[in-house]
Amino acid sequence: MAINIGFKRLTIQPFKKGKFPLEKDGEAIVIEGKADNGGMVSAELSGIAKEAKTVSASNTGYYISRKGVGEPKVEFEVLDLPVTAETKILGRTQSEKGVQYTGESTEAPYCAILMESNNASGDSAFVGMFYGVFSLDALSLKTEEVGADFEPENEKLTFTAAANPTTGDYQGMYMAKYAGKDTEAIKEIKDNVLLASVVASSQDPGHTGEQR
Image 1 (cartoon, rainbow, N blue to C red):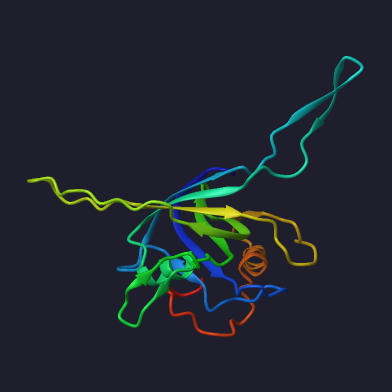
Image 2: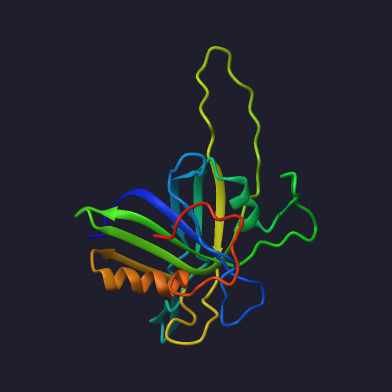
């Protein structure tokens, strides 16, 4: 079934810069609603299908160009994203005192992502993107309304996807998707998207949860 219910978890695996085959830069960052570690509100995928274009010949629509993808991206809304995770995925720097800095040399690392929901049968539903970067373009501050209950605002992150640069069967792929309860299939999508079976070469200080 193609119905997705809820948004349980987002797993983010940063990669080391300029390393091919890809190398994990520390352990995965997991955002799953645990106290003080942020929670996922929504995700909207777009650009995963190429806009069809009709090519004419002999006064008729002869061929429809449709191969490939458009400009895949995911728009996320996140509540209470930890600063350490934000610093890591946006390529910002953080001092020993916890001050975060952004400047002309700031460059977000490439990451893989795996979103987890449930389908209408109650089985796990996964959507993964092999390779891309996060961006956070805006920051807003808003007055407290007198007498009103405080309601925290969601942060809006954009993940812009690129083709998987690794060699092998999944080179050039953008997205992987699976819904069901087959443990081998679940392991396959985690291994191929997040490199889950590969041991990270260093501990990531931005790690905010356990790999599932």
